[in-house]
Image (cartoon, rainbow, N blue to C red; front, side, top):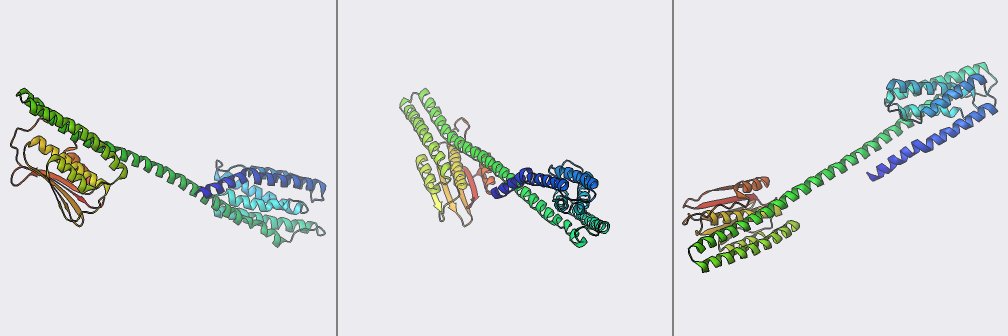
Length: 383
C-alpha cells in the first residue's frame, strides 16, 4: 500500500509539473514554427493555434468541479480544433495536439464510451481536414487521410492511465481505511484490556478487603466480650490478609501481562491458605488466560461468600477437566453461626455469570442437596 501511495504521488507530481511543462514547451515551439514556417491560411491557422493552446492549458487543471456537459464541450472543442490545425501547419509541432486531444478525452472524461466518441470525432475531423487541404493545395505536402485516423488512438492510453490512477487512488483510500480500522480496533482492544485489568484488580481487592473486614468485625466482637487474646489474633489475621492481598494484586498484574495462569497451582495455594479441601478431576491441560482468571476469581468469590454467609462450615473446591470443558465447583455446609455483616466487594454471582457468558460458559449457584450452598462455573477449555 505504501508503494501505491508513492506511485500516486508521483502521478500527481507529473500532472502538476512535468506534463504542463512539456505541453507549454510544445505550445511555444508550435507558435514559433507557425510564424517561421510556411503554413496554409495563416490567419485561420493562427486563430486555431490560439484556441488549441488555450484548450491545452485548460486541460492542465482538474475537471472534477466542471459539469459533464462542459467537460464534453471542452474535450470536443479541443479535438476538433486540433484536428483542423494538423493539416494547416504540418511542418510544425501542431500535429501533436490532435493526439494530445484524444489522450485528454480518455483521461478527463469519466465515461469511456464518451471518450471514445470524442476520439472518433477527432480522427474523422482530422481525416476530413487532411482531405480538404489536400484537395485545395494539390502540390502541398500533406498527410494521407488514413494516417490522420491514427490521431484517435491515444484515447486508449488516456483511458488506461485514468483506470490506473483510479485504481491507485482506490488502493490508497482502502489502505487509509484499513489503517483507520486497525487503529480503531487497537483502541477498542486497549479499552477492553483496561476494563479487564480494572475488573481483575477489583476482584482481588474485593476479596481481600472482605476478608479483612470479617476479621476486624470478629476482633471487635471478641474485644467487647473481653476475649482480648483472640481479638488480637483476629487483628493479626486481618493484617496477614492485607499483606496477602497486596501480593495477590501484584500476582494478578503479572498474570495479566503474561496472559496465562497455572490454574491448578493457583487454586491449590488458595485452598491451602483458606484451609479448604481441594480436588482435581481429569487431566489438567493449559487453559486460556481468560478462562483461568475467571475460574480463580470465581473460586475466591465463592469461598469469601461461604465464609461470610456460613461461617464455621466446611468448604471444598473441585476442579474437573472434561474433553471440551472445565468445571469449578465450590461447596459449603449449612450455616451453623450467625452470618457476618455484609461488607460488599467481589464480583458476585452476577459478575460470575457475565464473565462465564462472555467466554461461552455458564455459572450457577443454589442450595446443595444435603444442605449448604453450591457454586458451579463451567467454561469451554479453549477461550
